[in-house]
Length: 111
Image (cartoon, rainbow, N blue to C red; front, side, top):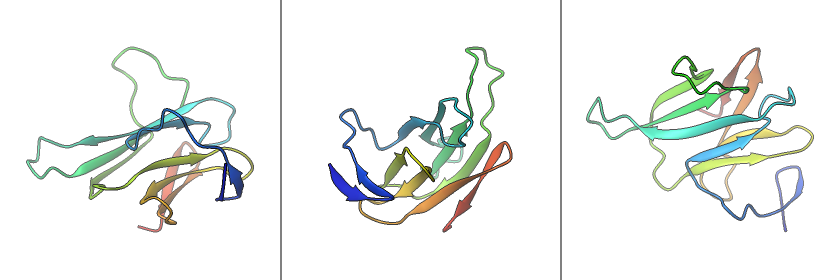
């Protein structure tokens, strides 16, 4: 356990820096965030995609938030569950960019 955003936070045993899941928007349904590389533009920039749950397995599922052209090398996604929970994008032990739910989408605070 370590003390961090909003109090004590348990370590995530299967942590991966470019994917996170949890109830990002507080509706009681699991949401998913992933970071992908946009190879179409040959820039090797990262794209952050957030999908609100529930999601279907067909190809009609669209992200509810998309932020292209990010430089995320050495950074990751972090989700802290609990009161005031938020999805954060940034370096370890930094404040980073906070995604705050707004309607069906999100607003990136700190960009």
